[in-house]
Length: 280
Image (tube, rainbow, N blue to C red; front, side, top):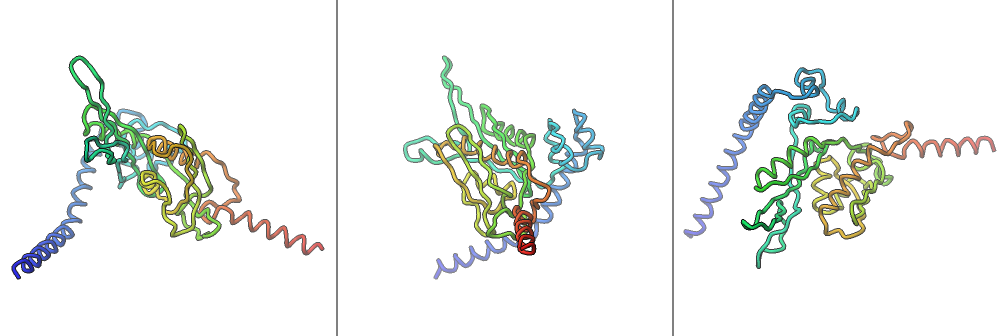
């Protein structure tokens, strides 16, 4: 009986804590917004592009990305893309007799010197707003925290825009949830092909690639990988190149990217068939 009473008390305490967290959630969001506003007010831009962003001449990040201008200050991305999410990819491997082999965020390397071993830590960060913008970068330092901060800062500087649509002939729902067409890229020995999938399929790719596509705003995709897939760095690099190729591939003006990649072409085929029937 005493154990049951203790369990009931623990459940009630947990429910009370959850209620307190939910009640404090909007207050915490307001505090975060205030902190960001104070950071933006205290931000002193060092580039001409940063001055234009802070003065209000540039209000959309597409104006920068479409022109191909280089972003040199992470505050520009924070200002134009609020609500960015970040995540670290598992590129390292833990050491030890029993815990060895488990994937970890930091990749550790050592340099042999007369003074002893000089370790270095590397990490790979992804940044995105889950709505068509994503950035990746690699950070390395002698300590873990500076390596993480460096990777996040560089990921914001490397942000790109990707195309999304309903490119699957099985779905054609008209919502941007997958790729507009199949795209392929190669890094090292790894070849990755991303293909449009119907709504509800999910992300049928490697776990680390799932994190990238989720932050990019893609919810349904099929994939095909060739080569040594266990080299995570090459797999992630191939994914980044594939997403960049989405913006390089040109499409005709008749093709509606949002309403389905093949909608217009199919309509033209039916119209041509009807004209041939009328002539006969």
